[in-house]
Length: 84
Image (cartoon, rainbow, N blue to C red; front, side, top):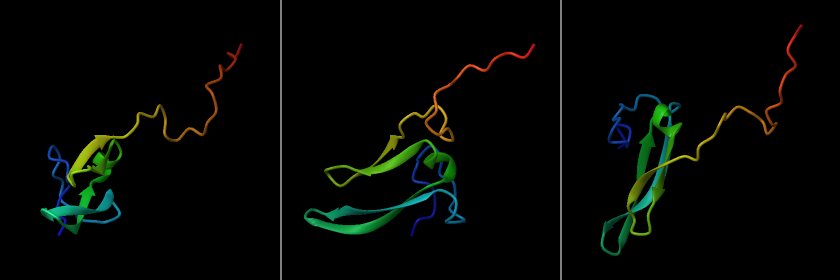
């Protein structure tokens, strides 16, 4: 069972499923066999990282693509005229 954030630098305890992100991967249990396993990234870690499954069946942490402002909706920065 998932008990803490999979990020080894964090290790935050899982208390609520609403915080963070749960991943389900089929990992290599023994050569030639795979089994489903759950992994959790806490809210803080999932804001900057994601989990991927490598070709060898290992779960890897990787950074999310950088975003200048995730709340901005596709409008370029326009200069505002100064008052006065």
